[in-house]
Amino acid sequence: MPALLAPVFLAWGANRFVDGASALSFNLGMPRILIGVLVMGFGTSLPEFLVSVFSSAMGNSGLSLGNAYGSNIMNIGIVLGLAAVMSPVGVRNRVVRRELPLLILATVVTGFLIMDLELSRSNGATLLVLFVVIAIYLIRSSSSEPARPENPPPLNEPEKETIPLGKSITYLAVGLAVIAICSAVLVWSARGIVGNLGISELVVGVVVLALGTSLPELVVIIVAARRGEHQLALGNVIGSNLFNTLAVVGTAGLIAPALVDAELVTRDLPVMFAFTAVLVVMAYGWGRRSGVINKYEGGALLLAAAGYIGFLVYSTPVFAQ
Image (cartoon, rainbow, N blue to C red; front, side, top):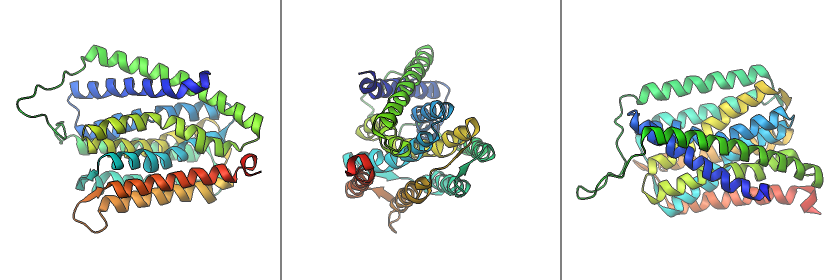
């Protein structure tokens, strides 16, 4: 029962955390792009981070890497795909010039480092250093941008009440605590599935944990899409994938260096590259002046993610019999 309820409370805790972080950023006058990429994107990736930390500490490196890369695939395929189906996601030029190239860089670097089927401490340190450099660059390059809403309310409508500073800090603390507890429950449950059914740790990490820990991104992006906050929605996905690729995998390598499952390099990593490449092409607009990820492209992303999950489940010996 705790394992079934954990994803629900995980989403609730992440929502509280993001609410608090967004309010804190607003109160401190941070630019809006930072809320989407740094605060929301990195904030909703805390479940992936904590799950990977716990998994690495317990010696389950397959869960750590599978969870990180699987979450990246789910973020683009399911989370962004669903958002585009609900409401077309417009892509501003600065996203194409700045955030997406950084995501491509992070994806290429992490792929290069684990091509030898080993995640060493030096690899982990390299990824973490790159993460810090990118975060600093985003903060500095965005410091001159105004913190204004993407769709301001009409003049005759009052602005929504902002969460006070003290309450936002409380949201941050409570949300983080709930995320930590639920992440631990998910790891123990996944270990039980691996032990009882003989399913590969990598498959459990890519499918079970990746779907569960992507719930915060999914919930946040649904809310953002309904409000027409397209840049927040896209920034959430890009920021989350940057965090997963660099901070999550890098921390796992520092905690417990390990051999990388060959299937991760030959199967899951190419799929993550493919989804990232498709996102870039959609963002560039297939040659149009401005990119818009429409509902048809969103539907294609959803179908591709569903096909990937189906392939993983079907190829697992337990289900293939």
